[in-house]
Image (cartoon, rainbow, N blue to C red; front, side):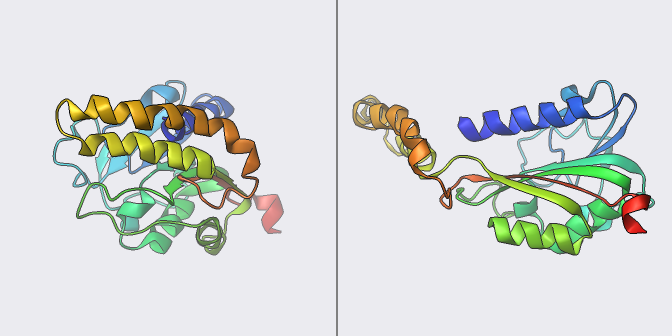
Length: 216
């Protein structure tokens, strides 16, 4: 579960980098799985609460539309949005709204998928290249953009081999595991061969809203 582990590490590092009491918006918080990282900050989890009927949305602070955030300008010092952009119909508007609600110098962390299966149907609309993400962030007026792929083709194939196990019924899954699991475990060792990482599960992006000094 390299993708999930990488996201968890990125969110934890993001939280550690923020000062005590910083106002943090989790845009597309779902069940609030990242709230615990922000115990020192003032965390606000927002979601439209329609993505997954099986989820418990009771821990949300606000139920709202990411394309029309119910906050004044410069409300938050930081914002995170984890595997959420694929579920919105107006991603450009959503990123601009997150940027609008950031204070000057405020920071943002976005995780978006590229090679990923359909999920939370029918609310699954987009996949993102690094160039598309860069465009969205720049159009929102953000700077210091960093976009990091989470693994390359070998981790991608490994993930898909594990995914394939779900299609084998009953005891056949154990037979399939004999053939699929060993290469799935070995393939990540070849990751250094894929330097471009154009085949990736997704991207972890960071950026910052210009401060007063950088605007002048």
